[in-house]
Image (cartoon, rainbow, N blue to C red):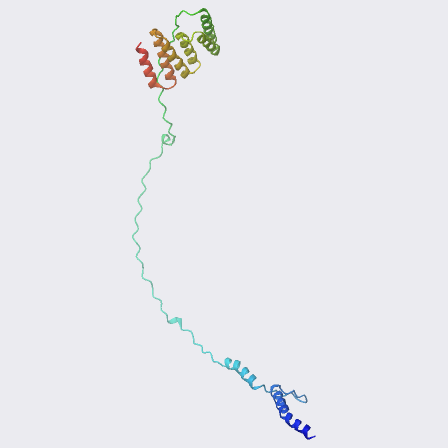
Length: 233
């Protein structure tokens, strides 16, 4: 029995301390009964926390009245001197446009081309072989009929038979000139002038044909040279 009493006595203080801590941390139970319930006092720590926002709300905000703007005086602006304006010039009277001035100017007319040197072909009288003579006669008939292609073909056949006959080259040059082939006619006339070694009359007419062919090609400087060459025979 004495041992049990000793144990109880030793454990009783610690038990009492634990009960005291529980009673301090927990709020007391509300009392129910007649009348309104009594307000419970908060703990010490809670009171300090609750007072802090109230203290903030008790700060006094000072306000100042606005200044009176009626006391501000407005000063008038000084007048700005404008530069002197120039007097506009009086418009000069313009003359009425004439009909000739309104009409578009026509382009200048080109100068007329120089006149061509008169050219008259000759009919050389040279003894020909019967075959070549027949071909030349056929070419003359085709030329009169206006069939220049057939006439040129007949003379070309005759040249293949007698390739060094200056008269045949001259006749073919005349046909090419009638076919509006002045460049080819010029080359054939030069060939004829080279082959006509001693026939100055044929040479002269060959260079006259060259003069006429160059004038058709608008080579007037070359035509003057050819005319001077023809006058030398």
